[in-house]
Length: 320
Image 1: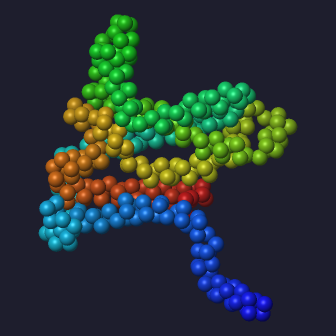
Image 2: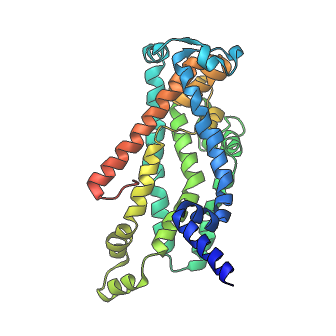
Image 3: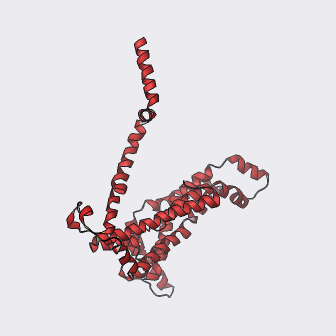
């Protein structure tokens, strides 16, 4: 018995001297669950960062992995070539405008919808509305663009049929550069606003009911409850998600743009991510494409840091 007590005491002392080992033994199941996530980010996010060096080299695919360290060093040549090209301003403008319009029209809608749903007296109707608005988020981007193509077809699309019956002229929406941004923003908002409202609904449902009762005693109207109670209580959640959204301000969805656009709408639809794809995959200019992609990522990083700093200065709340 004394020996067992001594061994147990020695184990406690050993574990106390090695707190990291103690946490590992205690939480090994959680760490095992986290392992696939860690592997995913290492393989698909951190390991590819080695390819950044291609943005400063004249890299050739035939040279293999060793070519990353043996290719001719060209310095900032690819960056100069991009900024001196006739496409640079158009790509930056289109990328920024698509992201900015998506933020302006897409970010407030989930908040408004969440407030409207939680203020409904008919709870059953609210739950049905939530489920209906969640569903588009799980529709594939390919399917969404296919639906848009069918609905907006100049010959057989239901939208153009209605326009013709009312005496108008059919419009080729998908090939008109003036309609590209509108279609991108509207379809994106429709597909995501229901799912994005989940976190705001959860934040609103977490408000203490006694606060509502106190405002009822004071005779506050429903509008006053929203302005003076709901919005202030979920402001930190709004700021947090806004910072994360601003960090991805230039991260326009490549898949959707690539499926929607054609040479006819390059003027308003060609963005940096699709340009990088064409230069790297189609034209095999890997060094040039890597340089443009690096610029793209650097601007996104600046947006994250700047928005976090601005939020901390203005509201006292920030992501870090």
